[in-house]
Structure formats: structure tokens, C-alpha cells
Length: 260
Image (tube, rainbow, N blue to C red; front, side, top):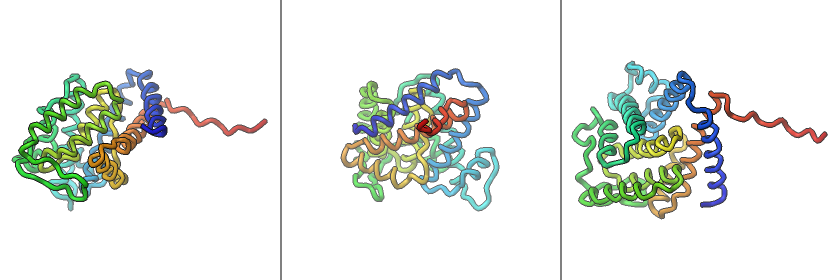
């Protein structure tokens, strides 16, 4: 791990310590923060995959309003993602271990009403990922690959939680076990690990899409997870800043030294 990444992870740890010291958080503040980050997470995760709903349109769709000129699929992608977030929050609250069953359940929610035949089911065909340097494993190997993923995760408990979350996400995306919805499911798994360890969710932004794909491809191709870990750490740091700002816990910048 290079020095700059180590410094970033230490900054994340310091902000998380401030947040932990303030727990339990005020009920209404916690609810508003949860709603804000869930909306941003849903909007950006779907936008990365090509959904054209704006942030404001995503908000009204989640409030039950239909947006004219947008497809039914785009509406489902928003409401499904929110349901998947609720499910992840539930399994985190229950301190459940990660299993293939949970991964399938998350994916089932992501594709509900979009492609019910493929929802929660490992692909039964081989696929290529456009623009990627690696090819997902043969579909016949998926049961063994997914079992190995869960086994790796169970054996990686001592890792820094951000590094573990980034690597879990990368390993899952490299396997690409489903016909569709792998990116959204992978980012939900990323945040399962982060939230389980007391971090707010990492919101990987639409405007960072190219950088995200680049560091993800690098990690899949070369096993170098530093880039994706840095991007995840930056995203978590941003979310922590949102919490600290609302709670008034962010340190005010020091006035410039006068030299007197």
C-alpha cells in the first residue's frame, strides 16, 4: 500500500472515530442522512449503468410518482434499488454473515419486474464484458467461483474494511455471475461490507464512471487493488463528511497564521 493511500485510509478512520464518538446519533438527523445517501446511492449506481433519470426524477419516482418520457425499466431500477438497500440494511442490522443466498436475494431485488426469469439465478451462458481486459469464467464454473468468493471473504476478516470491501466488489464483478445487474449488485455488496463495519455507504458517482471502470479493470486484470481501494476510500470519506457536517462535527478550518 503506497503512502498516499495509507494517509487517506487514516483520514477515513479519524472521521469515523469522530462519528462513532457521537453515537447514538439524533433520530431525525440519522433518518435524514440515511434518506439522502440512499437517494444519491440509487441515482448514481443506476446512472453508471445508463439509467437516464436525474437525481430529482429519481427522488420523485421513489415517492411513487411516474416521470413522463422515462421507461418502465428505469422506474423499476430506482424502486428496486431502494428495496435492495433496505434488504442490505436489514442483514447488516441482524449481523448476518455473507452467503451466496444473500447475494442471490440482492440480485433478485435488483432485477425484480425487469427480468424475473434471470433474477437471482446464475447465468447459464458465457459472456464478454465490453471494454474489459478480462473475460468472466465459463458459466459451468460459477458455483465453484461463487463458493470460492465467499470462502475468500470469510478468510479476509483481518483486512482493513475498506480494502476488503473494494476487493469483494472487484472479485464479484470479475466473476460476473449474472446475465444483468452485476454492477448494481456488486456496489450493494461493497456497501454491505462497509455498513457492517460501521461506515456510511460509499456513493461512487456517475461523473467518476470512467475512473471507476479503469481502476476496476486494472484490479481484475492485474490483481492490483490499490486504485479501486482509493476510489472507495474517497467515496466513504465524502459520505463521512456529509454526516459530520450535518452533525456539526467537522473541524472548522484554522485561520491563516498572521506571523505576529
